[in-house]
Length: 94
Image (tube, rainbow, N blue to C red; front, side):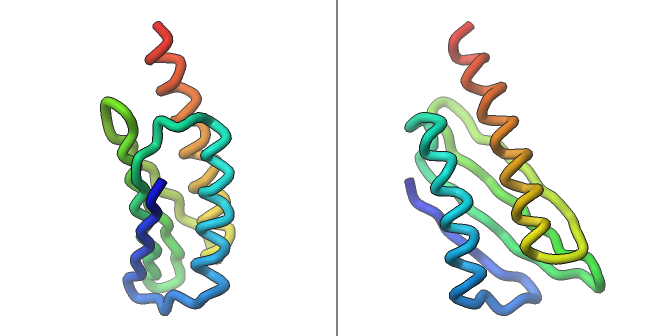
């Protein structure tokens, strides 16, 4: 699984990159249907936005979350992506 991290209006520090990598590595336990992940971290005025585009076997998934801090935006994004993966895997089984 390949993870690409982009920053728009925010400097990507090593701790921020490590945090994103650690969180998305947990998704590997859901199965090996994920081929690549593109994460975009954006700051617009006071809003911190985390977006993710996942290339999965047979399709693509997109999720985004907005919060007051970047770390909480990433946490919310992981929750959304996790839910989408569960639904997608159930669709594949049907």
